[in-house]
Structure formats: C-alpha cells, structure tokens
Amino acid sequence: MAGERIGLFGGTFDPVHFGHLRLAEEAREAAALSRVIFIPAARSPFKSHRLLTDAHHRYQMLLLATAPNPAFTPSDIEIQRGGISYTIDTVRQLAAQMPHAQLFLIMGLDSLAEFPQWRKPLQIIQHCRLLVGIRPGYAPEPILAMLPEAIRNAVHLVPSVPLDISASQLRAFVREGRSLRYLTPDNVIEYIRNHQLYLEGEAPAEPKPLEGEAPAEPKSQEA
Ligand code: ATP
Image 1 (spheres, rainbow, N blue to C red):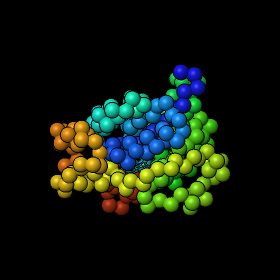
Image 2: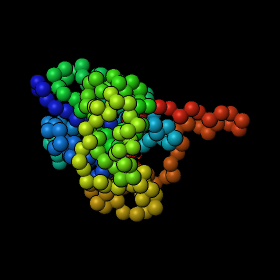
Image 3: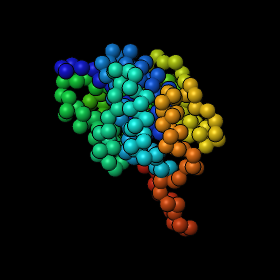
C-alpha cells in the first residue's frame, strides 16, 4: 500500500513477552503505524555468549503471541537469510520490497545505547526513523547525549509504560520451576511447556577457548 507506515521490530524473542508486545503497541499508536512486523534474528551479533533457542520455536511463539492483534505479524526474513542477522540487510531487503512504505525501527533504550555499534547505523537511519521505548534501568538522557547527532535526530522516544520484564528472566523462571503467568501470553506459556523449552541451563554459543588461547572478540551489531 502506498505510503503505509510500518514498524520493524527486531530481537531474539527468546521468548517473546509482554514487554515486547506492549512496546510494539505503544509504538504503533505513537507513530500511527498500520503494521508492526516482528523479526526474530537467526543469530544475534550481541548475544553470541549463549546458544539461542531454535529459530523455529521463537518464530512459532511470536505467531501465537501476535495472533490476536491484526496489526502485528512475525516475519521469518532473518531466519530464511540465516547466519548473523544484521538489521541493515533486513531494512534494505524490506525497503526494496515495499518502496512506498515509510519504515520505522522499534527498539528499547538498551538497544539504542548499542545502536552506534551496529553495522552501518547511518545507513539504517536513511531508511527508517527509530521508535524507542523506555526500559527500566536505562535513563534516556545519558543515552541520547552519547549518540552521534545524526542518530539522535532520528530518534523518537515513545512514551511507554515501563515494564521490567526480560526474556532472560522468563528463562530463569522456567529453570526454577516458577510461573510465567502475566509475563507473556498464556498460549506462549503453553508452547514453552509443551516443547519443554528453557529447562536446561544456558549453553554457550561458541566453545570455550582452550587454555592460553585468546577469547573471541565481542561482536558488534545486533538483531
Ligand atoms: P534477553 O533478556 O534475552 O536479553 P530481551 O527481553 O531484552 O532478551 P530481546 O528479544 O533481546 O528481548 O529484545 C528485543 C527488543 O525489545 C530490544 O530492542 C529490547 O530493547 C526491547 N525490549 C525487550 N524487553 C523490553 C521491555 N521490557 N521494555 C521495553 N523494551 C524491551
């Protein structure tokens, strides 16, 4: 559709939770988006310290969580592309597919703090404005102050209800046998239970370096 305003929301979504869903809804409302596309990363450059849950499961949980909202859809574009998922590649691909759409990138403040380290951030903001939701534990002012001006000018802070929920916390709750109710939709909880996800301790993504070997360089970019 010509001129359609579309939000792109990347992440690992391991698993999706109400912090993600609420941010997407607030961004949709604030920027009058007609759609929000949730894009699970195949592999995230910023989360190389642990093995992500199989992309198929993360995508299925997004399907369940977004089903009740007609404006929300997941996309498997990064899963299909495979390898490390760089946002610039996704944004370029989607901009080429939807040349008339106005694209917005949705993220939390913790991701904005890392945004200058992403691959080609200045090219990303040529394609989309950044819709940034507050996240408990992250103050907007110091993060905005340390951004290069071009990036800061692309940011629109989304007034949002702070929800102190993270996927790591949900994974830890499952391991501890604690309830996930009211942290993520019931159908996601059921999926986690049926597929016995998150019961094991977290596995490192890469083998530990042998003694005397230098540890792997931390990678930049994310989602
Ligand atoms: P993990 O705990 O595994 O690091 P996460 O909960 O941070 O995961 P991601 O999939 O890494 O979830 O996040 C995707 C995007 O959603 C990021 O831009 C992140 O800032 C944002 N986000 C995640 N949780 C929240 C939240 N509770 N409030 C606002 N933004 C959030």
